[in-house]
Image 1 (cartoon, rainbow, N blue to C red):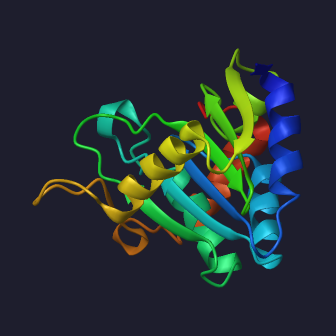
Image 2 (tube, rainbow, N blue to C red):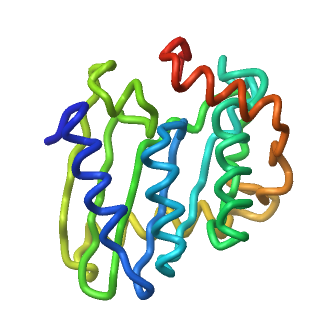
Length: 194
């Protein structure tokens, strides 16, 4: 069981450890922390397969009406990685996609981080009371298979005909420089709600 800063320490250790045969999957309500952004970009440069399913933060369920931070951060990740980092948006219908799941995996092991911590400075820098479970398990274990299957179900829209969990990145990408600098100011100042 990890809380606040300990979540960040474990997260960074796993994001920075992957190599070309590994993968990182993230299902998250909010991503904004600059160290996490740089670690994901670093992982992509090392050849790690990085996939994110994010809430669009577009006002559904009380989220940010402008898409900040996720739409801006996702656009940065895709652009700076040359498309190596892949993003899909959870299709919200008045609710929030409030998952907080990170998986780092190779051929033999899967590391899971799940709980209440978003990938934001508020959650990771001892500013919010958050807690996550950290589990390292064999890739063939039931828990690992269930977690990987959950992510793949959402990513690939394995659902009843006519139902889609996620949509393509281009549906909500926000490369706006004005929004990008607003996000950076809000994140750096600590005045943001994320």
